[in-house]
Length: 232
Image (cartoon, rainbow, N blue to C red):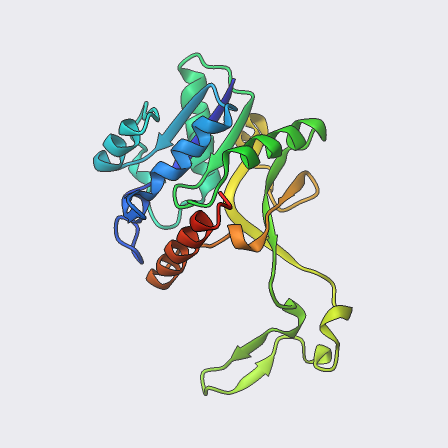
């Protein structure tokens, strides 16, 4: 079976209660749950949480919360892969045969159901271990600048000072929306950023990382504009 796992712990620090904070009229986690259902890719949609309030909201929107995530997997230092691995192994112990898994983040209101399904098809067609969302950097990373403790400027790559931007190689980053993977790859903790993965490219206007209050405000504005422009 194919399952979606949405990891949503309760202890967000920079944006308190981030995973269920209201985003343009409903809890932000609702967008991920609804997109998962609309994709028609999953036999079961699971929210992995340590928080009772998140559990109740997830259930309200139709997701299953078959377990409460253990405390040792709910602190600031636990990587997402271990949370996904725990969900897979819990399901298998309870007699569910898991073939493919999609980790879908709860703070990804721009995720689109049709993109989830198209990424799944690409993942299957190319028989990859993983397929996840990428987008391009808006500025050449080779010309990035850093500021030291004395408020002085330096380039990360000074040898690129005179390079024209059009001559520099394009670079991409994780869009932070979804991660399709074979259940066995998650269980074996096969590295994601490696040759076993394939990308599903997203336009930058559908990508906004939400880690700070500034990010949140920007994301809400972007979402409203996309809605008004009929781009969803």
